[in-house]
Amino acid sequence: MKNTTLCYIEQDGAYLLLHRVKKERDVNRDKWVGIGGHFEENESPEDCVLREALEETGLHLQAPRYCGIVTFVSDRWEGEYMHLFHAERFSGRLKDCDEGVLEWVPKEAVRSLPQWAGDRIFLGLMERRVPFFSLKLRYEGEALREAVLNGVVLEIS
Image 1 (cartoon, rainbow, N blue to C red):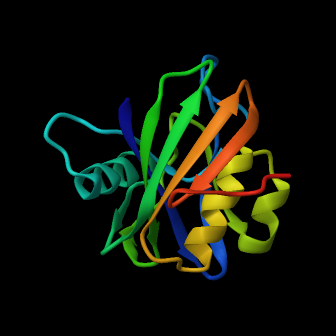
Image 2 (tube, rainbow, N blue to C red):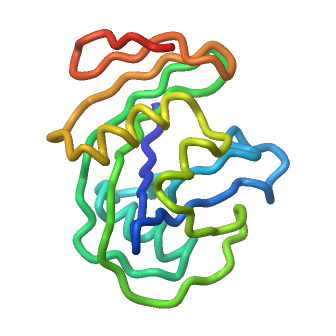
């Protein structure tokens, strides 16, 4: 299982999202996601999210909140442990990203954009400031088939 980070950077009622449109062979192609990426050797989740945010956005995050861990299981893709963060304080200047287009999206508009069904679940948990959580998401193709929060199966629609 690979380890990744994902961070929702927030400012003035909007999230900085990455519209993944620049890479042809991208599991997230055409979806709107937070900022993040794969761990490098000897990195902690905090090290990874700080580095990835700087590389992808040019922003230096200050004290991002570690929200939870999301376990992705799929019949198509390698399993993944994704470490979820939320940041409200940062410095620096936004730059272009080689993985997609960065855009500040009002929070109320995020759920209307193309994204994975499971993203809506963990985004809601993060927004409600649920204490540190473990969420397992099982996909068949692009369809979410199971969601388990802290060992309890959730009803998915």
